[in-house]
Image 1 (tube, rainbow, N blue to C red):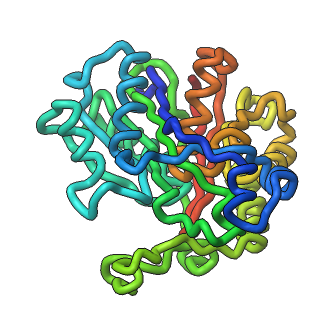
Image 2: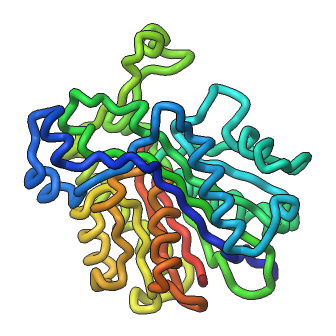
Length: 322
C-alpha cells in the first residue's frame, strides 16, 4: 500500500506584530477581554507590500529545506487560501513560477479555515493513486486584508501567516485517513458577503470584510469538532488514548479546550499557538504543526490528529503517523 508521509514542515510569519494593547488604541476593547474570551495575545500582520504568495513561498522553502529536497522534486502544489494574490492565476501557479517548477499540477483550494485539511486530503489521494510522488501543500493567508478594523468583534481574532508540508509517497504509514464535510446552509454565520460576481460594488469600494455571528459559530464549532473526532477514531478502530497529539485549528482557546475535553486529551498534548498567532485560517493548522515539530515536541512515529472548522461551514480532520 502507498502512503503519503510528511517529510518536512515549514512556516512563516510576517515581521509586523499587532498586540492587544495596540488594538486598545483602535477599537473599544481591552487586553483582558480579548485574552479571556479568545486566548489571543498578539497576531502577525503582513506588510503593505507583502502578499499571500510571499508568505507561502517562505513557508514552502522552509518545508523543502527540512525535507532535504529541491523544487524540481515536487510534482504537485496545492495552496489553501481564502485571500489569493489575484483572481487568477491561482496562488499555487504564482508560487510554482517562483520556485522554477514547470509542468506539474498546481491549484488552489478554498475551504477557509479547513482549507489546509482539505488540501492535505486532496494531495493524499493524488499520492495514493500514483498521480504524484511528492506534493507541496501550503496554507497561507493575509486575513488582515479582509478584516474590518472598526469591528471589535472580528478584528481582535485574525492574523496573517503561512504553513507548509511536503508529502512523499512511502511504504511506511503516514496519512492514515482524512475526513471532509461541509454544510452551506450556514453560510450567513461566517462570511465575506462581497465578491467578483456578487455585490461587486462593495468590493470596489473596499468594504469586502468578514462578518461573523460569533456565539452561533462557537456553539456549532464545538459540537462539530467533537463529532469529527469520534468519526475519525471510529473509522480507524482507534481509541482516544491512541492519539499522541491534537493539532486543532487555532480559532479560540475555548473551542480548543472543549475539543480536548471531548478527546479526553490533557492540554499538554494539544498544540496551542492561538495566543501568538491569532486565527490565521488555512495557515492555522500547518503553523501549529511546524511549531511543535521544530521545538521537538512532536517526534517521529507519533500519531497526530489535525482538525479544523471554518466558514461554509466546512470541517474536517487528518489522522497521521508522523
